[in-house]
Every structure is written in C-alpha cells, then in structure tokens.
Length: 104
Image (cartoon, rainbow, N blue to C red; front, side):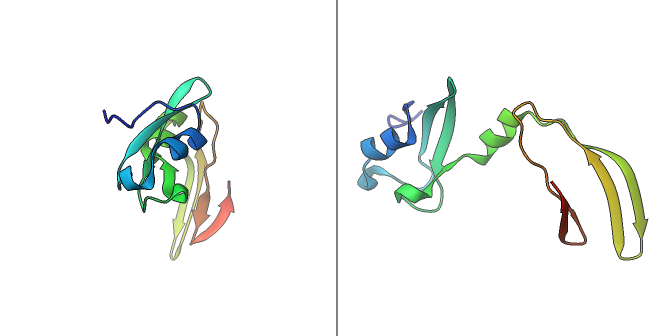
C-alpha cells in the first residue's frame, strides 16, 4: 500500500492533501464512504476531475448475481432476450437490442 493511500474522510480531503506534483497515473486512494473504504484512482490524468472510482470496486461491491437468460429468440438480424438480475447494492443494468437501449 502507498503512503498516500489514506483512508481519507472525503474526496475533498484527498484533493487537498495530495498535491498535483505528487499525483501519478494509477495512484490509488481510499475514501471512507458509508463506513467502508472505497478506492479511487487517477486513471486519465492528475487533475482533480480525473480522480475516478475504481471500476473493479463498483463491480465487487454490487455483488452481482450472474444474469440468467429467461427468454431467447434469434432470427436473421435480430436477437431478443429477457434477463433477470439482482444486486445487493442496487444499481442499473441496461439492455440493448440491435444497438438500441430497450430497458434499464
């Protein structure tokens, strides 16, 4: 773990404590949110606005249950299906059919 990891009490604390001169791509910090440490990372730059929640943490904290396909029909040029999902942390799933959003 890095010296600058934290955990910090807020994103504002992170941004005020770690100067741009010490930030680097991939630098990861921990921020306490809802009693748990959530990881953020500078992925695309070192500006304040480049600090993003780590995607793998979003996925693992949601504890998604693998979607099960309930209905699947395929015909030339078209695929229709129905998906059931569950998430402990809530969240959103978007279903696309032929490139168009149909549900979320």
